[in-house]
Length: 79
Image 1 (cartoon, rainbow, N blue to C red):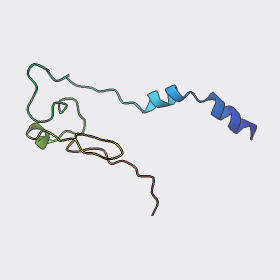
Image 2 (cartoon, helix red, strand yellow):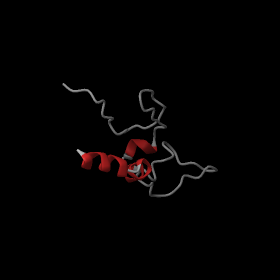
Image 3 (tube, rainbow, N blue to C red):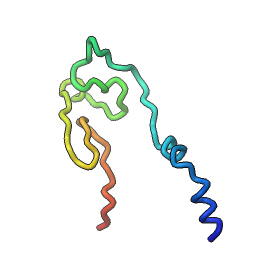
């Protein structure tokens, strides 16, 4: 069990978090002339045609988002 303790101590929480963060690609929306619909659609991998027409409204929950096509969150519940 000593290996487990060494493994846990060797983990750097910030390095682990950095592995999960995905950099944004694409163009930054112009603050002076924002695009129609969702301002992030030019750099969003989940953007679809409706994102150009509809401005997403914030929704609430454990992870608040303002997206028409948010990534489903794992609830941790088992069935």
